[in-house]
Image (cartoon, rainbow, N blue to C red; front, side):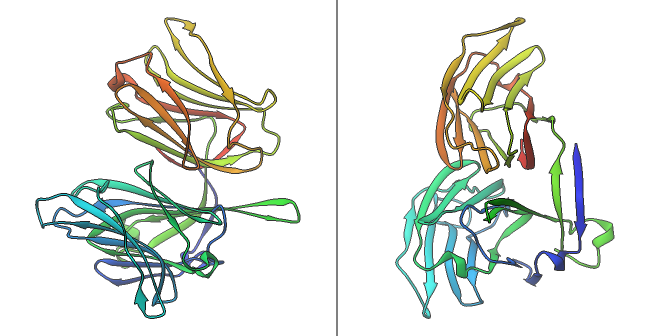
Length: 325
């Protein structure tokens, strides 16, 4: 399912430095761009008291800090602080008195860069928005500090010049336990990575409530149709189809050899030739579909044995760069 278009030494994409056992730094060549998406995946250590994900300019200026904190070492609720450090001082803290990053559990953190703000998603769900306090174009590195183990950092961006679309998909995977990299603990291997379409992946333990699926890619310039399906052994629990010629989205289910009643809506936020991030979140009652952080669809369950829905499929006119099933 995985096709490597090109393989690069890490230094050709970014300069990666291990500054300590709990500090990881990666230079962002070319800096941030409007429309870029950064995804950080990892696991919070069981005895963590806090960790930071920083977007920085140089070593001292922090444009955005996402800082989960825990009230006590083993018990008590956590919260998340957002802030900026410039001119030698921290600004005012913005708090979210909840944490989607429990100790001892895996997490994914997505940061979407827009002209006005950073849109932050946690485990695929919209979590917060942070207005820019300094130009995001100045950011040249991402730094993760604290008691967290990283598994993946991805950069997904689109540059438009002279009306020609130039895709730049940078996937950085930590291989610190791989025997070939035993001499480089915490190092990264970087490459352009495309997933074969049609794409199919197992969803381990099925689509349980609170499960979120993340899909990143680019719609092809002449796209006619793109389809996302959550399947079980005998049918399709959730079918989401982008029909570009008709400018419509179709949602449906396929059970007992028959399609159900279609639910249609206008084609929102998906454009030919443009990148996207889709997040499908499952609740006890429905699926919620988020596109680039915005809720565009709510689809009530027609097939309710959620643990049996264990296959994700993506097909059609799309290039996939990252999937977290």
